[in-house]
Image 1 (spheres, rainbow over the protein chains, first blue to last red):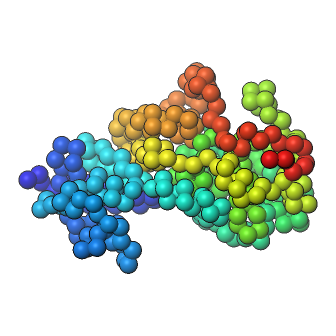
Image 2: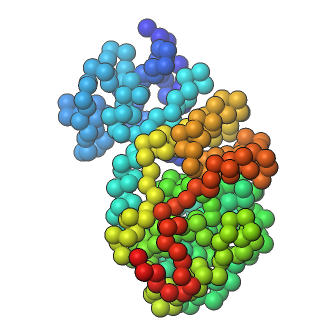
Image 3: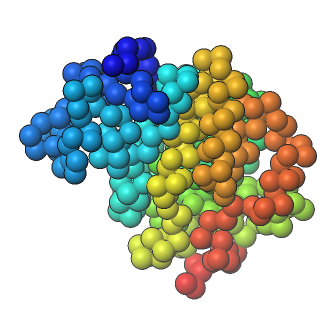
Length: 139
Length: 207
């Protein structure tokens, strides 16, 4: 049994510190730790966050005596996962299907970003106006 | 440019929202300070907007109407002719189309046309963004060599995404205007489906 080590799970703008068991390329975390960090919990219905659940195809693959396999967890949620075992870090991305479904509604996704003075501004503040979103960069 | 347009069209219910896809607000500061914007001028170091709207290059423009609906999806257009010699696009027809939208409501695409001209993410491009996020975190935590592996992997997974490939050059210590950029440009500039629709000056396009 691998010893639990400090591991960082990057999820959006959060970097979650957790304890993980490493075994080759496999990263496993205790179900309680996963629940506390991500809000996802393994229940009889599947993986659940609050009242919303996704079914789990292969429960034995996802969670065993040694914890929840992070890669299988990400796959069950249809989310991409980039792992660097040597660096003890992984990034959990957003599901392509859910982003596509949202874009197909044609409702412009809201966001909040800082300006140069650190003031947070949201797209939704400008409801009622015609907005031109302009993405640019110094590069 | 956008400040002048805001002053011209703000009273018609128009607002430009600029989002800099830069690694550091300081990289965007000279551009913002030169423009003296009173419209929202935001900085997206974490590529939040790049991901939500699936942007693959800059500049990228999106029209959002009063109800918060996308009425023209992402499109590479320019507010000035500074780089017209490089990309061949004129700003005047686009600015005329923009004025016609704000003043007269012209140029709005129907929902089916918007949907068929959206560029959409795939599991591969989303995995690329996860690798980019991991690389960016590793870089900021003093592990540039590990970060490099994931920037490279992200670029392999999303070869047509310059927000990843060119946007990570300044982080990786590569000049984004240097030889590596010109090598990248040989593969072709990333295109949005909107580029198949010509912009006709100031009028609604036949689609």
